[in-house]
Length: 477
Image 1: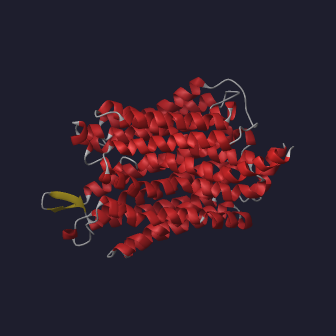
Image 2: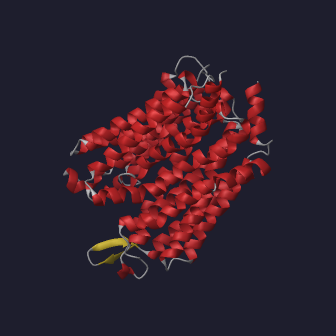
């Protein structure tokens, strides 16, 4: 190896984590990018509020469906290739949204943007393939934090652009971020040699997609359709039936989309169960805190903030998530990822308890959000470490994608439950109807309960050797 080649290899190694983190933040931004526009979309698109809500639902469904598929394709054909492909889909979706003034193309573009969510588990799998073992925990913690950082920073970012320019500029910027991610990925990220070649499981992919649609559509639309309506009940029951068929089918395939036997191992199963609960708890913050900050002063408990100012007030929580990455790695190195996950759940619950008792000043909400951000940073850093210590190297992308899917199911459930609570517990201020203080406090307690459930599942994860040893052993095999 020449001196130039060695220098180039070191440069790539140093740049790998920042580049993948940039890609992760860019993809995570897609989840909150459209939030500032939601009240204006019916006028902008000449459509009903129920119709424009599909701009959010489409992103959720596409992300849930595509994430496990992109993980399996990454294990089969190369993770860098799938990273570039996912970012390219995001760019196409952004361009479609930027060029439209009607509902259907916007929903299509938003679905394409949501399909890029698989970038984050793919990036985490790349770290395991390419970095020295001692650098993996810290790098994984940084990548995991991008989910929360993108969501936290996305709100003021999107609100600022929407207020200063036109709403189309939001999607122009997201397209530029995607193109930059593609260029840097091609320049910095090497293609992994860890592959699991074979025939793609098309039937498994279709069954899983149908099960997720039947599950997530009622969760997202139940409040509109009615929770006891035949459509909601029928689709929910259908989701259970199709999921059972999918598990039965996958367990008999030599090259399944998701290795259900591997996913059924206690460490993986309990980590994924905890991920659902923690995804629920995390998203309660995204839903409740901005609305509390923007509630009118006339309520007696609201702060009358604009969307932009509310986003700025909550932005420090994302910075806390990222800054805690080194600490989470040290806790994992010393005590194991299970302890890190438990610390994250406890801190997350403490943030909501703080908000339950202290909510009379903006700084109270800022502190509560930072505690929630700290908990999310610790917990989300621990999940991939737990998953990858329990699966073979050739399954890392698919296993991390499934874990990301579990978090998405948790966030989707939170959107439904918290939405129902805040819609049912309201006060009228003039012509406006806003959530009541009792509704916000009930939301905080529900989130605390979710963290308690996550702690129970965390306690059921078996004690094991530190993740790095497990990764090394698996790689050796």
